[in-house]
Length: 168
Length: 111
Length: 313
Image (cartoon, rainbow over all chains, first blue to last red; front, side, top):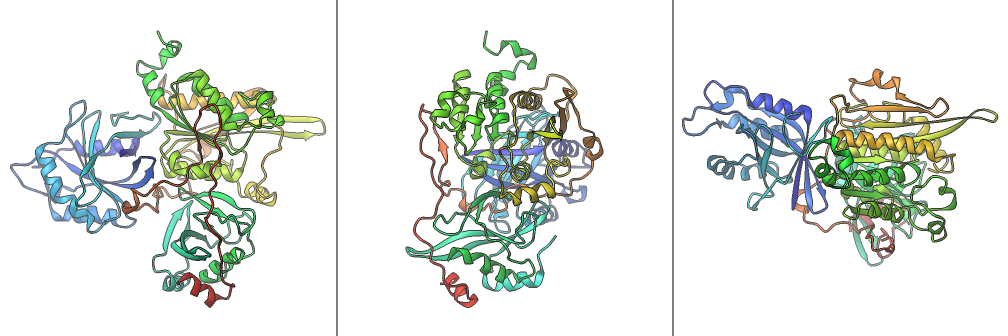
């Protein structure tokens, strides 16, 4: 199955600016995208419509991981994706250039919280995205017990339609 | 523009799974499981009700996920909320009626 | 050395970008046939094309790729377009549908850009809405000939590029309530109006330029929205004034949050696809698949309680 995610240039720039802001104690910032979905031949299309920045006070101190967010942040994210029902995509950036990769911490942590998103929102897929400064990688869960699928294509919809999630 | 709450509530008594769909700045009512009786057994199709006039000469209109080739006249195809829908020429069903009456009236040409 | 060397100014990755681009063309008449030809020449790699019509003699004055022979054979406009594309770029993948574009929604959702050469006002309106919903830039073309006084005619037309967050065809006056009502009075008939090849060519070329500008821009100045008005008597193509008045204003005809398929359910993702209306280009055209309901429908009389009984059995 081919998975494509589309985002407007304006929103992607907003996400990058937000994720680049320093945090008082977290090493990296995270956020959530909500996306609607549509079936396409042999695949799935996700269309990003909102971004939720995790507020400073919703991070929890942790000396081991880059960023840990509390239950309030999760609750706000689920609320945003609940009505109308949307896919919830956790997003953060590793910086640098080229195709980014998920760290072990990213994947272990996602394996814990993403399946839980199917309880309030079972009708949509949910996932994890990581950015570099010019590209993106993503994993999608199609159910709480399902194997994950990779995101194959990232499209930036802007004056210049690009299949890379770099800057304009 | 939002659906009439009282009319929608009455409709929900018969179809609890009815959904309000937002498209083109207006609303449609989606009946995901409209059962019709056929000679070869009951068939479940999806229908979309537009209980308001949009200047196309139809005060209200009922669209179906499939075309019934043996019934109704002048079937046309439409794109609404990103999907294909079919409707036949059946006009004159007032938007002032309760939603249930509108649906019943639009099913009349399929007799 | 490749056949696209003369367009290398579009950038070192332009060949690859264009070959991977997926362009939808709705309507393959006077405007759409030009667009198809030019996009094939420029190296577009994937086409999704739809038109339910066959060529007739009155199309020959403007349908690119149409021949006397194709008229005699009542060849579908889809097949004419497929042959044209494949003759120019055999590596191009063409998904052709002898059908109204509304019947191939699922496939069109996967397009990067869609170009509409549609006669009907309702079809333009629906195409605009569809593209907004799936975040697809939409380019609409149209031309008309008006009799301004007995024996004097004005050739005019327009090409409009629009998309999410931009003024829609209703904002720009291309789709109007009057136009929709008038078309409804004529039972949806939109054809039979005067049409000639050269304005179609000019408008189609402008549309193709907008496509390429979005995929492989060749300079800094570009816009997410365009409204090029053509005056065929003065031979002028210029940006319409209405665009300046409408740019930056939110579109009141569409909710920005209405994206994606509102009927999508994860549980149905693996359901089998709808019946295909696709033609595979093998040199012959396969019969059009009919979308119909198997069996007969027997609805009880319209008394409300009997109807409800039927519906809930």
